[in-house]
Length: 111
Image (cartoon, rainbow, N blue to C red; front, top):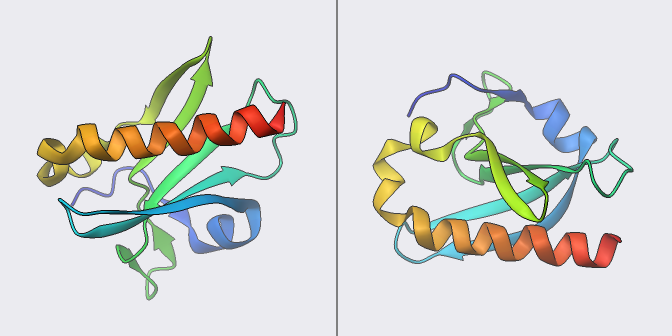
């Protein structure tokens, strides 16, 4: 795992709210889709996707699986999962689909 992009556990626990969790059968990992709470404009939402069991509490940092924004009704990756977790590239389509469903489900309710 590369840890080029990290977030503190404080940011994740105090600065985000949980949007959805899902379990990916192919990778056998549980993911959490979280939204940066300080963003109130529906057109400027930032979502942080983490693998729930992939953080080291001794470092107090979380390596996000992905960071996602929606621009013109399309999901764009700010932190690309293929760079953070290249071992999961074969499973990206399934994971991406679940992330997309979570993100757009939230945005549809938020607006």
